[in-house]
Image (cartoon, rainbow, N blue to C red):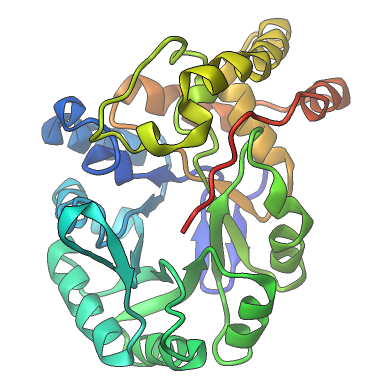
Length: 316
C-alpha cells in the first residue's frame, strides 16, 4: 500500500469513491438507492475515506443519498462536494459564481448532507461572468467561518489555479484522468505537484468503458454517455484496442482490466487520488483492490503505447 497523501488540511486515502453515478448521469432504471447506501457502507469498511458528490448531481438528490449513507458514520468520512453549476429546463446547465450564491449553495449542501462542515468544497466550473477571485474569496470566507475545511476546483486552467491559489490555498484540483484521457499530465498535474495539491482523478475507468464490460452496449438518451463521442458505435469499436491492451497486462499479472486502469492512474503521481464511481458493491471491491496493484516498467510502457481514443470529449 502506498503512503497516504497529505494535501493541506485533508488526509486523503489512496482511492476515493465517486458518488455521481448513484443518482445522476446514467440510466435512471439502473439506480437503486438502498444498494448505493450499501456501497457507501462497504467503502467505509474497506478504508475508503473520500466521498465525492455535487449539488448538481440528481440534481440535488445525490448529496441527500450520501448523507443517508453516512448517517451515524460521519466521522469516518471526508465529504467532497461542489457548487457553481445550476440546472436549467431541458437538462442544460448554467454557471453561477456570485459570492451570495456560493454562500446559499453551501448552506443547502450542508442541510442535504446532514453535516455541519464540508471537508472539501469545490467550485464545479468557473463562471466567466464573475471575477474568479470574488468567487474564490467567498469560498475562503466559508473556511474562516468553519463551514468548510478546505477548497478545491474542477476544470480550472493553470493560470486560473495560479490566480486563486494567491487568494486562498487550493487543496485539490479535479479533472478526468485515465488511460484514454491523459492530457492533464502535461499541465495540471505538474501544477498540483509544485503546489502540494491533490489531483482528484474522476472517470479513471473511462466511464466504465476501460473495464471491458461495455462491449456492444448502447445508451439511452438519459445516459450521458450517449452524448460522449467516445461512445458512438464506431468509436467503441475502434477503442477496443485500448481495452485489449489493458486485458493483456491484466492477464499477465493476475488482475482485471479495471484494476490495471486504476493502478495506471495511481502510478502517475503520489498526488493523484482516483475516484472511480460505482453503485455496485462488487465493482467497488474490485476497484479498491487496485490500490494493492503495482505495475512494472514493462506494464507501464505497454499502456503508454496504447492508441489514443477515437472521439474527444470536451468538458464544458
